Image (cartoon, rainbow, N blue to C red):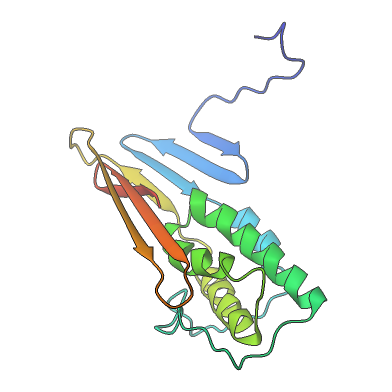
Length: 173
């Protein structure tokens, strides 16, 4: 392999870092966090410390009277949503529903969408130290996958979702 590729990095042991993920392997458990990445993308953001959920019940409600964001705000919105999507797909599945919806709004975000983004960011700051824990708990390895789709009625859009469990733990959503 070294003859084909100029630079190869190998890490051995319990601690690994890959694509902003910190991976800690111990007996029967793998812990994955992205605390450094979260600090980077939330730098300068003031959080609502009361936030205990990434979204409210009105997440999927679209207010047609909400003003559109300016082009600068729209670009910032798009960037933050993309950063959150990267995070949610790797280590913070708890964000995925809210971020997935916000991703559907990047072409025409409104002030109301920005508020929903701020809610996700506040929740993220308040829960920065959460880790995804993968454990087998002595059980045999099993893999379960659940998939669903919804075809929009009013706006002709569709949504799909998937969650994959390994040994009873959600590993992909």
